[in-house]
Length: 469
Image (cartoon, rainbow, N blue to C red; front, side, top):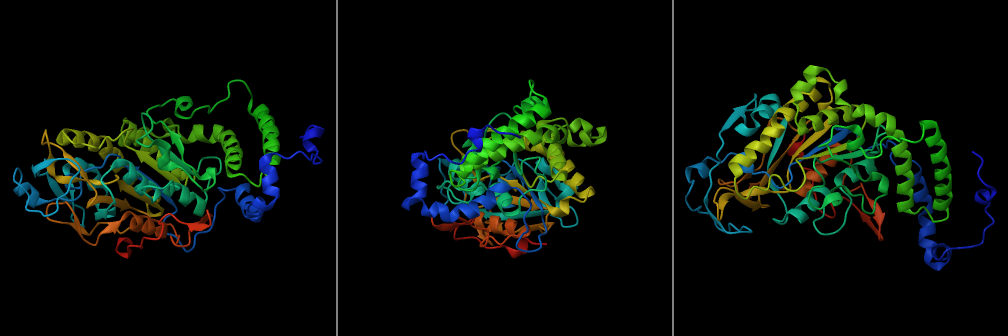
């Protein structure tokens, strides 16, 4: 492309204030980093080699925002049922709100698979399809019983400070296998969840690693992905237009010592252009056979999971699916009805998804995580006494596929399901273990920022070897 002579010229001596500072004493640090930043910015999503041979190549994070109850899903407590309606003989049972008597689960549990893993009736289809592939961690612990910091801890590894999300770290460490699609996709029907885009931000990592949000309440591709089609220009004209814009941006970037925000914008323009063809095909579930679509069901989560499988086949590295905006699982009252409804929306699609991955040979290299930001109390909350308060002392999540140990229940809460008492697992431990399955050493996956080598797990976290197959 022939650019105007003024654009090609490199003789200009007019500096902005920022350029002046970068070329004088305060800019030496920026100059030292220019080579590193330039190498990173050229193709930040290109595939990268892991630290060691991985079991998993990709991640699907099923986020049950609001906090599902462990004692009503994957951690049965017969003693809680026995003492239903009575005070619990537990010391230091601290809760955020006023709570009363023991509240036994309104659901029955049954053992499934050769492993005999006990699962609640509200996830019966999932258990029947994949009990021997579930690695249930019953001894999870978070730091505080509040949604916002616990969401940040689970998603970004830090409850207070702005840090990159898990998906951003994974894409930074491994890149993506398809640069025509985002390496990190987030699906949440009905709008943003609580604290919105902070859940999938890239923070101080380059912006190319941030999650791309889709509102999956929509089925029309033009509403699912904003501006996916250009109604005024042909693809060839768009390409010429983009080439000009990118040439201008590249010069602008060079003069500003590889500014990460500008670099992110350049990458976003290019990705948006390439997505127009690839994304329309990937998200079109009508191309699936009828029996596959029927297996997943016609609901929103069935659509989300079927699109997820299609994206995994196309090389997307990290996909996060939410139950919906707000905090659907935050059932301080009406738990029996609401948990049954929420689980019912996930159960059939989740069973179909795990079965589909297994049959296609994808499950063994896809690490699936299910869970929320914390769990819920074993006692009923006032005034309705038919719901549960937040509980970060002991809760459940599970992994499946990707080298996780199937048909296994790790650790334990006390006999009432309040506090982790055996083999407690912190969120940092969980992240370290998942990175290990992806072939990455969490202590070596670092990024230099503010003079420090930052990492997802901070200064904590240990790989839990019992969770590995």
